[in-house]
Amino acid sequence: MATLLRMATAGSVDDGKSTLVGRLLHDSKAVLADQLEAVERVSRDKGLGHVDLALLTDGLRAEREQGITIDVAYRYFATAKRSFILADCPGHVQYTRNTVTGSSTADVLVVLVDARHGVVEQTRRHLAVGHLLRVPHVVVAVNKIDLVDWSEQRFTEVAAQVHRVTTNLGIESVQVLPVSALIGDNVVSRSRQMDWYTGPSLLEFLETLPADDPSTRHTETGEVDRPLRFPVQLALRPQGAAVAEELGEYRGYAGQISSGVIRRGERVVVLPSGKHTTVVGIDTASGELTEAFAPQSVALRLADEIDITRGELIASAQDAPVVTKDLRLTVVWLHERALTPGAKVLVKHTTRTVQGIVTSIDGRLGLDSLDARPAERLELNDIGRLRLRLSNPVMADSYEQNRGTGSLLLVDSQSGANLAAGMIDGTGAVGLDEEGL
Image (cartoon, rainbow, N blue to C red):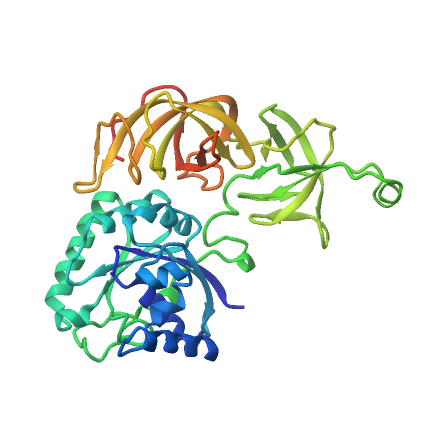
């Protein structure tokens, strides 16, 4: 069984993301004949002298008319070595929120850079988002290398710019490689135009990366090795004579395991109440299990009758998360309305939604120098740190320790619009450390 790799593409406007994705699909034989015919027809109608492979992913009419990507376009393809879920994210700064969405579940982030322009502000923003979201692998594709005469010197200059940014951000490992998405050099097949480049093509490199794979029980990403976190979505109390005859007095708690392994007979704690109990059954639609692991969806039966509702958490008794009303966050602000201290928001954390108030803003990331700066407000697409006080407690881990219980959304209580994607840095009402963002 081929392993699955979740990848996202990002980069500035006109860096060639959609063309790169189209080239990957085309050269890996993942495009159906009728799809290719439609793209060829539209390319002719636009008066192009070549097949515009970007049209394979720019599916919205507005995207095709404007020549930009607006929404995240998901595509699925496979090679002999692995399967891919690919999220083609918008490049325009206005749609940074979509880049956050596409990158949040990615195993690898592929950031495109135009060889003529080098690293620009949006490149730094996308690399910062990838780092904050803890995307395990980062690849920078220096695109349009054909427009600088396949220059090794120019590639070396751009690669040095990339490494300066990733070093300042704290990204430990990044792969930089030259490509021409339009022509197809070094995307799937290695280029004959760049005899100075001896590394892998983009696809060859992606096929070698370790990734999340249910068949290996998430051991490669460490989800199984993390403590048990099971946010409760629904309490199951089936009613009716037929159900009672088949199941007896059934009481279960349904949800998706965020991290860790749960075994029958294991001691767990229910939060925020802090009550301890034992797992006596693990049920699925296919039958009962003796153990389950992230990201399986199951129903747990417990030894004791405990009042448990949606939004509560079943966790490892030996390593439970912090129950707190005070959070310190790094956020990507996604709304046109600026954020200021005192703002009231809804906080969606796992399956729990509570009210919160922003008690302070503790800094903003300057994308030109990548340092932390004092800030009194956060504007659209700003990356900053803030503190929240909640009306009711949540069960929180730091994002670095657990992406599932370390992430949250800030939501407008009136309109329901998403305001920010947040990563938990810590808990408690004490001041933040003085380290950079």
